[in-house]
Image 1: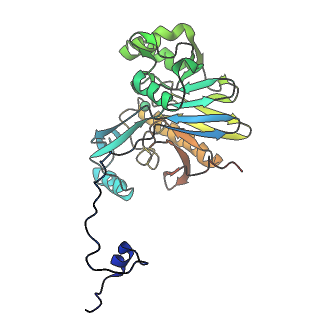
Image 2: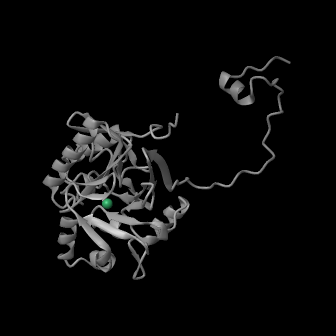
Length: 310
Ligand SMILES: [Zn+2]
Protein backbone atom coordinates (compact mmCIF):
# COMPACT_ATOMS: atom_id res chain seq x y z
CA UNK A 1 0.00 0.00 0.00
CA UNK A 2 1.46 3.31 -1.03
CA UNK A 3 1.35 6.32 1.23
CA UNK A 4 -1.51 8.56 0.09
CA UNK A 5 -0.62 12.09 -0.87
CA UNK A 6 -2.62 14.88 0.68
CA UNK A 7 -2.40 18.62 0.74
CA UNK A 8 -1.02 20.80 3.50
CA UNK A 9 -4.57 22.07 4.13
CA UNK A 10 -5.86 18.53 4.60
CA UNK A 11 -2.98 17.81 6.93
CA UNK A 12 -3.87 20.82 9.06
CA UNK A 13 -7.52 19.81 9.19
CA UNK A 14 -6.69 16.24 10.11
CA UNK A 15 -4.24 17.32 12.79
CA UNK A 16 -0.58 17.21 11.93
CA UNK A 17 0.37 15.26 15.04
CA UNK A 18 -1.99 12.37 14.30
CA UNK A 19 -1.01 9.46 12.11
CA UNK A 20 -3.02 9.31 8.93
CA UNK A 21 -5.29 6.26 9.09
CA UNK A 22 -7.45 5.83 5.99
CA UNK A 23 -11.12 5.41 6.91
CA UNK A 24 -10.76 6.88 10.38
CA UNK A 25 -11.95 10.38 9.41
CA UNK A 26 -15.63 9.65 9.23
CA UNK A 27 -18.85 11.60 9.77
CA UNK A 28 -18.97 12.90 13.37
CA UNK A 29 -21.42 11.03 15.54
CA UNK A 30 -22.58 14.04 17.59
CA UNK A 31 -25.65 16.09 16.58
CA UNK A 32 -25.30 19.46 14.88
CA UNK A 33 -25.65 22.49 17.20
CA UNK A 34 -28.74 24.62 16.71
CA UNK A 35 -28.26 27.80 14.72
CA UNK A 36 -28.72 30.71 17.11
CA UNK A 37 -28.77 33.75 14.83
CA UNK A 38 -26.48 36.75 14.98
CA UNK A 39 -25.56 37.99 18.44
CA UNK A 40 -26.51 41.48 19.52
CA UNK A 41 -24.75 43.20 22.42
CA UNK A 42 -26.97 45.82 24.04
CA UNK A 43 -24.65 47.80 26.29
CA UNK A 44 -21.02 48.81 26.46
CA UNK A 45 -19.59 50.47 29.57
CA UNK A 46 -16.25 52.20 29.95
CA UNK A 47 -14.51 54.55 32.36
CA UNK A 48 -13.93 58.21 31.50
CA UNK A 49 -11.98 59.87 34.30
CA UNK A 50 -14.29 59.70 37.30
CA UNK A 51 -17.34 58.97 35.15
CA UNK A 52 -18.70 55.67 33.90
CA UNK A 53 -20.15 55.93 30.41
CA UNK A 54 -22.50 53.26 29.01
CA UNK A 55 -23.75 53.18 25.45
CA UNK A 56 -27.13 51.42 25.27
CA UNK A 57 -28.49 49.86 22.10
CA UNK A 58 -32.18 50.72 22.39
CA UNK A 59 -32.97 49.53 18.87
CA UNK A 60 -31.52 48.54 15.50
CA UNK A 61 -33.10 47.75 12.16
CA UNK A 62 -32.27 47.25 8.51
CA UNK A 63 -33.52 50.05 6.25
CA UNK A 64 -33.96 49.82 2.49
CA UNK A 65 -32.59 52.24 -0.04
CA UNK A 66 -30.31 54.47 2.06
CA UNK A 67 -29.44 56.45 -1.06
CA UNK A 68 -32.75 58.27 -0.63
CA UNK A 69 -31.68 59.34 2.86
CA UNK A 70 -27.94 59.97 2.62
CA UNK A 71 -27.43 60.55 -1.09
CA UNK A 72 -30.16 63.09 -1.77
CA UNK A 73 -28.00 65.32 -3.92
CA UNK A 74 -25.11 62.94 -4.54
CA UNK A 75 -24.31 61.51 -7.95
CA UNK A 76 -25.51 57.87 -7.73
CA UNK A 77 -22.29 56.57 -9.25
CA UNK A 78 -20.25 58.42 -6.61
CA UNK A 79 -22.54 57.16 -3.84
CA UNK A 80 -22.06 53.62 -5.12
CA UNK A 81 -18.29 54.00 -5.41
CA UNK A 82 -17.88 55.47 -1.93
CA UNK A 83 -20.04 52.70 -0.48
CA UNK A 84 -18.17 49.95 -2.30
CA UNK A 85 -14.84 51.33 -1.12
CA UNK A 86 -16.14 51.08 2.46
CA UNK A 87 -17.46 47.52 1.91
CA UNK A 88 -21.07 48.73 2.24
CA UNK A 89 -24.08 47.84 0.08
CA UNK A 90 -26.28 50.62 -1.30
CA UNK A 91 -29.60 48.76 -1.34
CA UNK A 92 -29.87 48.64 2.45
CA UNK A 93 -28.25 49.95 5.62
CA UNK A 94 -28.30 49.04 9.30
CA UNK A 95 -29.62 51.75 11.59
CA UNK A 96 -28.66 51.95 15.26
CA UNK A 97 -30.35 53.92 18.06
CA UNK A 98 -27.94 54.34 20.95
CA UNK A 99 -28.73 56.46 24.02
CA UNK A 100 -25.84 57.09 26.42
CA UNK A 101 -25.89 56.75 30.20
CA UNK A 102 -23.36 58.69 32.25
CA UNK A 103 -22.80 57.92 35.92
CA UNK A 104 -21.06 61.03 37.26
CA UNK A 105 -20.60 59.44 40.67
CA UNK A 106 -23.35 61.72 41.94
CA UNK A 107 -26.10 61.24 39.36
CA UNK A 108 -27.20 58.91 36.56
CA UNK A 109 -27.67 61.02 33.44
CA UNK A 110 -29.35 59.49 30.37
CA UNK A 111 -28.93 61.13 26.97
CA UNK A 112 -31.96 60.41 24.73
CA UNK A 113 -34.44 57.56 25.06
CA UNK A 114 -34.72 55.56 21.83
CA UNK A 115 -37.78 54.86 19.69
CA UNK A 116 -39.96 53.50 22.51
CA UNK A 117 -39.79 52.80 26.24
CA UNK A 118 -39.57 49.03 25.78
CA UNK A 119 -36.25 49.12 23.92
CA UNK A 120 -34.84 51.72 26.28
CA UNK A 121 -35.71 49.93 29.49
CA UNK A 122 -34.60 46.57 28.10
CA UNK A 123 -31.15 47.95 27.29
CA UNK A 124 -30.96 49.60 30.71
CA UNK A 125 -31.98 46.34 32.40
CA UNK A 126 -29.22 44.47 30.58
CA UNK A 127 -26.80 47.05 31.97
CA UNK A 128 -28.20 46.53 35.49
CA UNK A 129 -30.12 49.81 35.72
CA UNK A 130 -33.81 50.30 36.50
CA UNK A 131 -35.73 53.32 35.12
CA UNK A 132 -36.35 54.60 38.66
CA UNK A 133 -32.61 55.05 39.13
CA UNK A 134 -32.31 57.66 36.38
CA UNK A 135 -31.79 61.13 37.90
CA UNK A 136 -31.56 63.26 34.77
CA UNK A 137 -32.78 62.72 31.19
CA UNK A 138 -31.15 64.95 28.58
CA UNK A 139 -32.88 65.27 25.20
CA UNK A 140 -30.41 66.30 22.49
CA UNK A 141 -33.23 67.10 20.06
CA UNK A 142 -36.85 66.14 19.65
CA UNK A 143 -37.03 63.69 16.76
CA UNK A 144 -39.13 60.62 17.50
CA UNK A 145 -36.17 58.25 17.80
CA UNK A 146 -34.81 60.35 20.69
CA UNK A 147 -37.96 61.22 22.64
CA UNK A 148 -39.88 57.97 22.00
CA UNK A 149 -38.92 56.36 25.31
CA UNK A 150 -39.87 59.28 27.58
CA UNK A 151 -43.44 58.10 28.22
CA UNK A 152 -45.24 54.76 28.23
CA UNK A 153 -49.02 54.52 28.22
CA UNK A 154 -49.29 58.11 29.39
CA UNK A 155 -46.90 57.73 32.32
CA UNK A 156 -43.28 58.86 32.58
CA UNK A 157 -40.82 56.01 31.97
CA UNK A 158 -38.33 57.58 34.38
CA UNK A 159 -40.48 58.27 37.42
CA UNK A 160 -37.91 60.15 39.49
CA UNK A 161 -36.02 62.04 36.79
CA UNK A 162 -35.63 65.70 35.99
CA UNK A 163 -35.27 66.66 32.34
CA UNK A 164 -32.94 68.94 30.41
CA UNK A 165 -33.06 70.06 26.79
CA UNK A 166 -32.11 72.96 24.56
CA UNK A 167 -34.20 76.10 24.89
CA UNK A 168 -34.31 76.74 21.14
CA UNK A 169 -35.25 73.12 20.46
CA UNK A 170 -38.11 73.20 22.93
CA UNK A 171 -39.37 76.53 21.65
CA UNK A 172 -39.44 75.18 18.10
CA UNK A 173 -41.35 71.97 18.80
CA UNK A 174 -43.72 73.44 21.39
CA UNK A 175 -45.11 75.68 18.68
CA UNK A 176 -45.10 73.10 15.89
CA UNK A 177 -48.32 71.13 16.60
CA UNK A 178 -46.22 67.95 16.70
CA UNK A 179 -47.85 64.77 17.99
CA UNK A 180 -44.57 63.30 19.25
CA UNK A 181 -43.85 66.42 21.26
CA UNK A 182 -47.37 66.60 22.64
CA UNK A 183 -47.31 62.93 23.69
CA UNK A 184 -43.75 62.53 24.92
CA UNK A 185 -42.44 65.95 25.97
CA UNK A 186 -45.30 68.25 26.89
CA UNK A 187 -46.41 66.14 29.91
CA UNK A 188 -42.89 66.53 31.38
CA UNK A 189 -42.44 70.29 30.95
CA UNK A 190 -42.92 71.05 34.64
CA UNK A 191 -39.85 68.95 35.41
CA UNK A 192 -37.77 70.28 32.50
CA UNK A 193 -35.06 72.92 32.42
CA UNK A 194 -33.73 74.57 29.27
CA UNK A 195 -30.15 75.20 28.21
CA UNK A 196 -28.41 77.48 25.76
CA UNK A 197 -24.93 77.03 24.29
CA UNK A 198 -22.47 76.52 27.16
CA UNK A 199 -25.15 75.56 29.66
CA UNK A 200 -24.38 72.95 32.32
CA UNK A 201 -26.34 69.73 32.95
CA UNK A 202 -24.18 68.70 35.88
CA UNK A 203 -20.56 69.20 36.87
CA UNK A 204 -18.50 68.08 33.84
CA UNK A 205 -21.40 67.96 31.37
CA UNK A 206 -21.70 71.03 29.14
CA UNK A 207 -24.10 71.75 26.27
CA UNK A 208 -22.72 72.91 22.93
CA UNK A 209 -24.98 74.30 20.23
CA UNK A 210 -24.94 72.17 17.06
CA UNK A 211 -27.89 73.52 15.13
CA UNK A 212 -28.99 72.30 11.71
CA UNK A 213 -30.18 68.71 12.07
CA UNK A 214 -33.01 70.34 14.02
CA UNK A 215 -33.35 74.03 14.93
CA UNK A 216 -31.97 73.57 18.47
CA UNK A 217 -29.97 70.31 18.23
CA UNK A 218 -27.30 70.16 20.98
CA UNK A 219 -24.15 68.16 21.59
CA UNK A 220 -22.64 67.60 25.05
CA UNK A 221 -19.03 67.70 26.21
CA UNK A 222 -18.12 65.33 29.03
CA UNK A 223 -15.07 66.26 31.11
CA UNK A 224 -13.82 64.33 34.13
CA UNK A 225 -10.36 64.16 35.70
CA UNK A 226 -8.69 65.40 32.53
CA UNK A 227 -10.55 62.99 30.21
CA UNK A 228 -12.98 64.32 27.61
CA UNK A 229 -15.57 62.95 25.21
CA UNK A 230 -18.25 64.53 23.03
CA UNK A 231 -21.78 63.16 22.71
CA UNK A 232 -22.50 64.34 19.17
CA UNK A 233 -26.10 63.03 18.95
CA UNK A 234 -27.21 63.36 15.30
CA UNK A 235 -24.53 65.76 14.08
CA UNK A 236 -23.60 62.95 11.65
CA UNK A 237 -25.93 60.01 11.07
CA UNK A 238 -23.69 57.65 9.10
CA UNK A 239 -20.04 56.84 9.70
CA UNK A 240 -19.10 56.92 6.01
CA UNK A 241 -21.70 58.84 4.04
CA UNK A 242 -21.94 61.72 6.51
CA UNK A 243 -18.44 61.79 8.01
CA UNK A 244 -16.34 61.27 4.89
CA UNK A 245 -18.72 63.53 2.95
CA UNK A 246 -20.08 66.12 5.39
CA UNK A 247 -21.69 68.16 2.63
CA UNK A 248 -23.82 65.31 1.26
CA UNK A 249 -27.37 66.32 2.06
CA UNK A 250 -29.28 64.12 4.52
CA UNK A 251 -33.04 63.81 4.36
CA UNK A 252 -33.40 64.09 8.14
CA UNK A 253 -31.49 67.39 8.40
CA UNK A 254 -33.97 70.26 8.77
CA UNK A 255 -31.55 72.96 7.57
CA UNK A 256 -29.19 71.14 5.23
CA UNK A 257 -26.62 73.91 4.85
CA UNK A 258 -26.48 74.57 8.60
CA UNK A 259 -26.25 70.82 9.33
CA UNK A 260 -23.29 70.46 6.95
CA UNK A 261 -21.54 73.49 8.45
CA UNK A 262 -22.13 72.08 11.94
CA UNK A 263 -20.71 68.69 10.90
CA UNK A 264 -17.54 70.41 9.74
CA UNK A 265 -17.27 72.52 12.89
CA UNK A 266 -18.01 69.78 15.43
CA UNK A 267 -15.91 67.06 13.83
CA UNK A 268 -13.17 69.53 12.98
CA UNK A 269 -12.89 70.27 16.70
CA UNK A 270 -13.07 66.59 17.66
CA UNK A 271 -10.37 65.71 15.10
CA UNK A 272 -8.12 68.59 16.15
CA UNK A 273 -8.44 67.76 19.84
CA UNK A 274 -8.25 63.99 19.14
CA UNK A 275 -11.24 63.41 21.40
CA UNK A 276 -13.40 60.30 21.45
CA UNK A 277 -17.06 60.81 20.58
CA UNK A 278 -20.32 58.90 20.84
CA UNK A 279 -22.69 59.14 17.88
CA UNK A 280 -26.31 58.13 18.39
CA UNK A 281 -26.46 56.49 14.95
CA UNK A 282 -22.90 55.18 14.68
CA UNK A 283 -22.53 51.38 14.48
CA UNK A 284 -22.81 49.94 18.00
CA UNK A 285 -21.04 50.39 20.43
CA UNK A 286 -21.27 53.80 18.79
CA UNK A 287 -18.03 55.43 19.81
CA UNK A 288 -14.73 56.21 18.18
CA UNK A 289 -12.57 58.96 16.78
CA UNK A 290 -12.25 60.96 13.58
CA UNK A 291 -9.29 62.32 11.72
CA UNK A 292 -9.40 64.95 8.98
CA UNK A 293 -9.14 63.15 5.64
CA UNK A 294 -9.49 64.75 2.23
CA UNK A 295 -12.59 66.91 2.17
CA UNK A 296 -14.12 65.26 5.25
CA UNK A 297 -13.31 62.90 8.07
CA UNK A 298 -12.29 59.29 8.48
CA UNK A 299 -14.09 57.39 11.25
CA UNK A 300 -11.85 55.30 13.48
CA UNK A 301 -13.97 53.00 15.67
CA UNK A 302 -12.67 52.67 19.22
CA UNK A 303 -10.76 49.49 19.97
CA UNK A 304 -9.20 49.12 23.43
CA UNK A 305 -8.52 52.78 24.23
CA UNK A 306 -11.15 52.82 26.97
CA UNK A 307 -10.25 49.45 28.48
CA UNK A 308 -6.76 49.97 29.83
CA UNK A 309 -6.50 50.19 33.60
CA UNK A 310 -2.78 50.06 34.34
ZN1 LIG B 1 -31.77 60.35 15.43
